[in-house]
Length: 147
Image 1 (cartoon, rainbow, N blue to C red):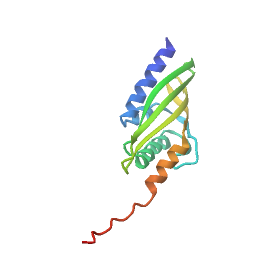
Image 2 (image 1 turned 60 degrees about the vertical axis):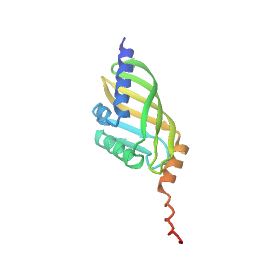
Image 3 (image 1 turned 30 degrees about the horizontal axis):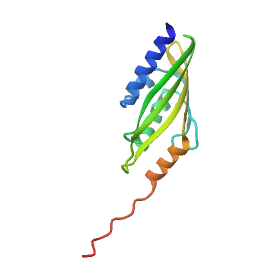
Image 4 (image 1 turned 135 degrees about the horizontal axis):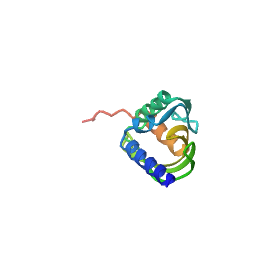
């Protein structure tokens, strides 16, 4: 029964995150939270604490406005003082240049008494970096009509 409750809470939290309500997960963060977003990209991170966690979501929104993350599946195991949950995530949206963005991510979290103490996210960094590169490329200047 406990694991069903954890899965419900994870699903509810991801629905809120998916609609842009990042406070839903930041409010679950323990003071000693460690968050890692693996990869050598502008979103790559190894940070500690709720404020740094909130700042990461701000950066995510700045770099990829309109891109949202949706939970596909979740599994949970362990006891209330050391719960592990794994989530499969779908990342989608329209980039600022109008192209569609689709990616997949996996998340591994540790909860202690309902507080998030460790969060590890692995996204396809090649797909992510290609999108970030595309958004940083200078756009060609409009040419004047020669008529």
